[in-house]
Amino acid sequence: MNIRTPSMAQHSPLIDNLLVHVADVLGFPEACVLLEDGGHRTLSVFRKHGHVRVRSIPVDSPLLRGVVHGTGHIYVADPASEPSLFSASARILLIDLATPPPYPRALLLLNDSTVSSGAEPSVTEVETYRQLVSSAVIAALDVQHQQRRIRELEQGRTLAEERFTVVEQLDNAYVEMDTVAAAVQICAELAMKDVAVFDPAARVVAMSEYRSHMSRPEWSLMAPILDSLSVMGTSAGKPVVIDANALTSAGVNRRKIVTSVSGRGEMFGWLVFDETPGAFRPNDEYIAEKAAQRIAAQYVTQRRIARVADDTRSVLAQQLLHGYGALSDIDARAEHLGVNIAAKRVVVFVPVQTTDGRDFMPEVVEALESCLDTEILATQEASGWSLLIAVSDDATSTDTVEKTRVAVANALSVSDGGPHVAGVSSVCEPHQLRQGYDDARQIVRCIDRIGAREGVVTVFDLGPARLLIAHGDDNALQRYVAEVLGPLFGDRGEPELIQTMANWYAAGCNARVAAMALDVHENTVRARLARVHALTGFDVIGVSDDRFSVQTALTILRLKTPGLLSLASSAPGPDRTAPIP
Image (cartoon, rainbow, N blue to C red; front, side):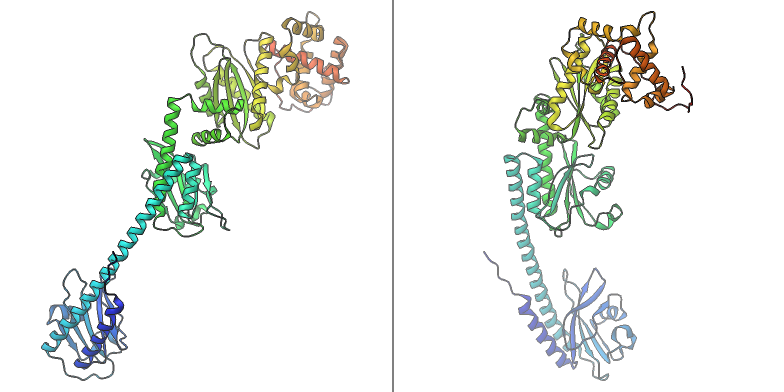
């Protein structure tokens, strides 16, 4: 049902005509009605007739006090007492319209800017016209109030309809797609803003841009802002509008609506609306609040599933290693866990060796995450544990693998799980994880083949020799080492030759680098390699096949007897001008 009320357009001419009549009867050319504005402590012009130059009067003006505490009106033949208000007036008449509460105080001002003389109106005339004008003003204010109320009701109805649409679409996205990305996309469409979800570490989990526009979202600048909100302890799930002026120091130029994504006492991240491509609207905070609730519910549900089912991270690791499961399922699982499945990783395989049944690997994983400051996925199979260790995109493969080897060796040594062996792959792209897993297991088979009880070995330590060692007979491997390196041992052996070769291979067959590591002259290194040739018949400098044969024997020897082939420090020694014999 449509409610029809009189409009101000209908009442305005009535008040204007009444002002014309009152001014004419009382002998003034100009008239206006002043209404009190409580916020500014003034009375301002509501309606006027003629060229009244007074725009407002302070409530503490002596004239107003005279009207209120006097007879209800005041006639001033010399407005010089208020020159700042009535500098262009010759005479004025102020009448208190005595509007009852809750209406604002109203005054009728009659002004004459030309003739200073004139008879003061009688009390009867003032009271008659005071009642007429007061009634007209009250009626006009009633109409204003009704119109304002109707607008508020209409806005409330529109707002309720929009909010119902928000809840309905968010629920549909939650039921049909069940992903954070879907909720973010719906938020962007409903609010017509750029939207993103951040994890507690201020990393982007999902984002969506509303259409295409020139101004790009400022997501990369949000980390310090979200950190500060975490410190401030903002109310869970309540949107906070951050003014752009408070963000200029962080390089942010637009306002943001930030809502914490929290549920069951756990903080999952932040939902952020960027004020682009348009200004925020009244419903945007509601959209943010309800969307944050739905996203938090998704996280809570995923956590519950993770507790009831198998370890979700373990399942994800197996999916990445073995390539089973739908890609959409892998993406959804990784998104809820906050795992970046596009990251490069090093695969570590640790075979099960304990007999007491104690699971020590969670301690190892925790120690590795603390040491390497990175994300690790771990999964257990019947034969052992596989660790998928994330590495940075710009990390060099050899340095990263060696850093990982040292960290794994240290973590295993303090786990109190007894001596351990482990294989470490090279840095793998996501599609290479299966190959990295196979390489790590092959390294462990090499270690097991030659009977070593402990040691963490990388794919670079073995090189291509791992293909021979992994499938060779233990006795045959020992005979091979004896045939190649046997003359360097025994009573007539020269152990420094073994150390020299080990450092020479570690230096990439560079005599100068090896000499610096051994703190000898490079000619000494060449002389020792020539001595190896003389004793064993293998020319590691001049014949590539001999070089590979000796390297393979040294690799087997290193695995068989850890610590025997310790590499010297790579720090350069002092300058030398002559070989050291």
